[in-house]
Amino acid sequence: MKRLLTFLLLFVMSATVAFGCSPTGGNQQQVLSIYNYASYIAPEAIAQFEKENNVKIQYDTFENSDALYAKLKQGNPGYDLIFPADYMVKIMVAENIIEPLNLNNIPNQKNLDPKFINQSFDPGNKYSLPYQWGTMGIGYNFKATKTEINSWAAMFDPKYTGKTAWQDDARYTLAGVLMYLGLDPNTTNPEEINKARDLLIKNKNMIAAFVPDTGQALLDQGEVNLTMEWSGDIFQVMKENSNLRYAIPKEGTVIFSDNMAIPKGARHKELAEKFINFALQPEIGAKISNFTRFGSPNKAAIDKGLIDPQDLKNPQIYPPAEVLGKMKFLEDVGKATALYDRAWTEVKAGAGK
Image (cartoon, rainbow, N blue to C red):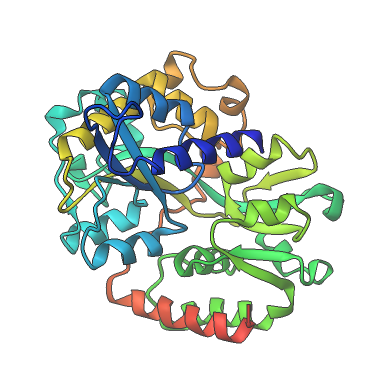
């Protein structure tokens, strides 16, 4: 947990200079306001960008894509750079929440793996560029399970009653249950969505909590034995706790690509583009992925051998093609979003967590 404490200390320090006053009381520095997940960037990358550009970074955090969307939907409260998930980019473009990028200011886009650019949610990368990618799977305590986990079925196994946690996120949690049921995680069929809802409610005694991106902490502290969580989040705590494991369920799971984008009304658009270009340098991209333990979309960083070789060889972080073939990106389901929201409200009420 030392890295996390260092990370938090760095951003508490950054937050105290929200209006950019230099420590010596001299000229004011520009402030780049970033809105991202916690522990989702290497602190040394932040420090390097601040030093090289004589700026301060104000770093605020959100818990999931819904929280990011809710914050920006009512108007930009002052952010210059945000990190939406793949399907959320498409929603934000449709609702005029994010700005087109000036790709001429971001030449380091050349370093990206072609697999992660020009995707259906943002053709031509007009509005976003990839940041990190990974999977949603099951983190578990091998000391408690005494067996390897390889299926979503474990989340419904009575022997873990009261010791499982799911993401407090309608789309991702319902997606995991839908894939367990052999259904499309992007279904717009209300009967299928309700099947996932009903299974969660039926197994409410299994569930200790719906967590806002903190399942890894509950797992690490022994409060749960299994948790639905992002790959990198589990690998971060695994470094400190040898009992923990991560599994990609055999039924398939959600793969995601988080992206860098600029919200409407950003006060420092060019500085935000400078940060995006900075993050896409091979050396910086490697620093970020080596800290977060998520997959890097930066092909140049991989080709230059800058990614931690143990991570690069880990099939749970960089899955082989046959495993990737069972994964799906979430998509914008349009009006069917209301079906997911209603089902989720009923899950939360029915499971009582």
